[in-house]
Image (cartoon, rainbow, N blue to C red; front, top):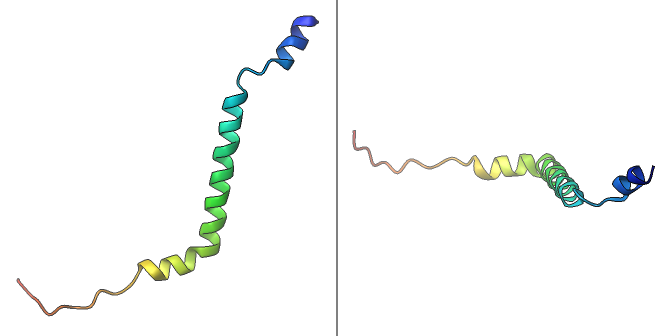
Length: 57
């Protein structure tokens, strides 16, 4: 019984869980920001490049 309690209170692996939670938080923030800013970013990066009139072929 004492070993079970010690293993329950042991903090090994706590850093791994914290990194996992941090990665999940970053993924959620990126997903929400892409949903919120997706259309405006799409319009910003999909601009038409004007024809320079320089034809080399």
